[in-house]
Length: 200
Ligand code: GAR
Image 1: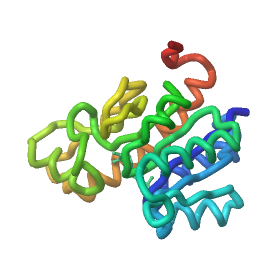
Image 2: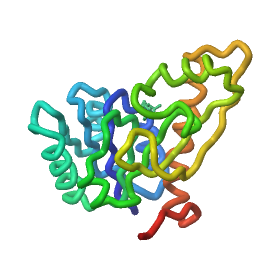
Image 3: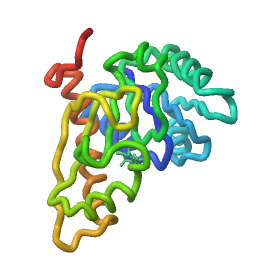
């Protein structure tokens, strides 16, 4: 069983989809630890309800980004984490985590990156921008994390078609539904060696 550390900032629906997949044997892993940078995130409360260990690493506790980076490495190390999954984590991951967990930090993003990623591209903004650009499809990207928002090698993408009467809200719902399946499927493919992570 692989050990997952999940980073969250918000409502945690992707975290819950992974938890469900682990519990039902669709993903041969366990969520060992959930870390949030936001003490008010619904995801933290949901994880606690499921008796998953949680940690809040935020700017009210840690004086600067290096201190929180260090604390995050310590928390992940303590739980012997194999993969660090960003499931709606809205902060940059620090260099200490990225170096300690090199090629093991994975993000999900609700667009076909490199389109509609980066700073400011979160929540409904993404889907509004996709429709404003007249795209005929959108989708989900799962990628390795580097020090920038929504960058790093793409591991998998799945497209979602855009209907003529699509609204940002309807597109968001369609994309999220795909996310909930694709994240755990992709992690299982990594565990099974079907998707290969760089080894350097
Ligand atoms: C998800 O759509 C995820 O792809 C996105 O935030 C949402 C979190 O929802 N992540 C990003 O935009 C990262 N740049 P959730 O908290 O319900 O899983």
